[in-house]
Image (cartoon, rainbow, N blue to C red):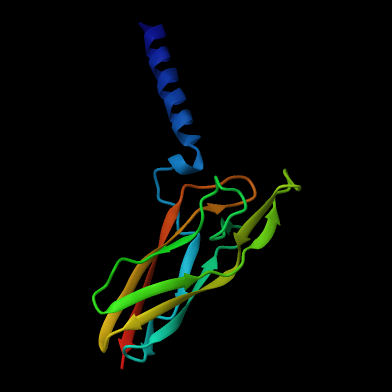
Length: 162
């Protein structure tokens, strides 16, 4: 009976140790965003005419995200997803050129990434009134050791068309 008790205790400890050694994407707590939308929160544009809104983002220090045009087709590109909004039309988004980056483990394999702060230029046309440009920046963040599952960073701009 005593041996059975010890077997149960050892099994419980083994399960506890295994749970503590989870991989980053298996963590029970949600990782904070690796990309943050900075500004603008509100902008005024001419009604009925195309205007460009500069959307500012920041990638956390020590992290990088694939650019909108990665050099390898299997990598996940950064995208801005904005649903159709009544009275507000998004005609195109201009992304900056990515910076070349190579991991220390593979110095000959170049990546096209964004680090630090970067700006997207959203071309919009709005009818007179107040509108909400609300969307998501879809990205995959990596550090020098691993890449994490794709995430969506929220973007919201109050657009006033006069």
